[in-house]
Image (tube, rainbow, N blue to C red; front, side, top):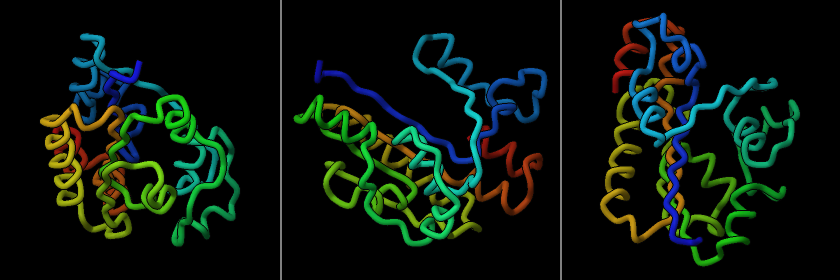
Length: 181
């Protein structure tokens, strides 16, 4: 049916031990457990091949292919994704459905104007921004939840956790705060 509403929430650098290790209470994302218990969310543990930068990882998620090391170079100058992918397949199956996106601007470069009905791409390389970029994504998410008749698939891509990890490592007070956020 084309009446469905699906939200894909990608939290860049969300480590599996933040989601699945309930014994690590300081760095355990409790909110996901609540959604899973209610049948409102599914968590998956994925093992990534290198390189683990944004463009190659998105290509792998969307196309099912293993990226090459050349994709590291292309990460800084992304262009339209020409390979078959799940968003193209979704639009083929449900051509009248609308896809909306908020987050890492790499998505906008991969799908320049042929997939998203509405989008807001945010600069992903401003790595000292731990807060504003995610607040903008959340603002877009809440805005879309108030107009659900305007979309069928909403994709949000959060970057703050990744930025903190690059700056301070995986276990610090900034990470705790971000997981609670």
